Length: 62
Image 1 (cartoon, rainbow, N blue to C red):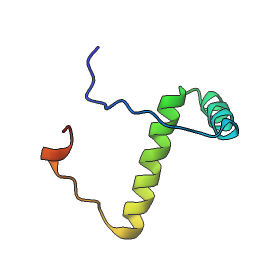
Image 2: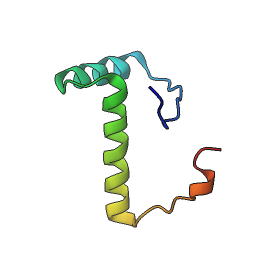
Image 3: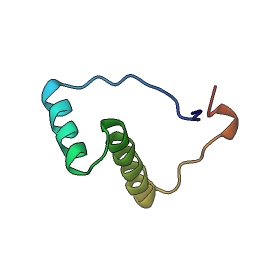
């Protein structure tokens, strides 16, 4: 299965990781899916208040 998603490493304090994992399970999501959902919600809220963030398509996967 190929994907265009970029893999990253994120560091969390143990309590934060425990709680976000708990929330993910309550939402029937993987931890990764929950973090991606939260990131998209954060972007949506930011852009709602500040305008759309321009994306340079040429720099996305470099």
